[in-house]
Image (cartoon, rainbow, N blue to C red; front, top):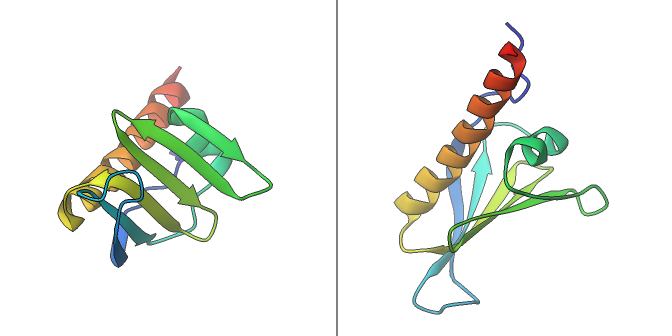
Length: 105
């Protein structure tokens, strides 16, 4: 079976910075294990795709996430590194699940 969105996950947390929008929250920069297919992620995540910038920007609740073409991911408005990693992986899982469901139709 061919997966439309490859199974990806966070391999490292590269930076932990104060969030610009809320200094009590964190902004995390992580690295995925592979480069994401941005048009496909944009199709299955609630977000916007900018081919020129090479990014997919999505929002879930108050958290914001940006996937970059080189495999980096930025998450804003999180409390911990662990929360950021879990959030990124859950967004990737959601995209994969939606892709698989679409593929079965």
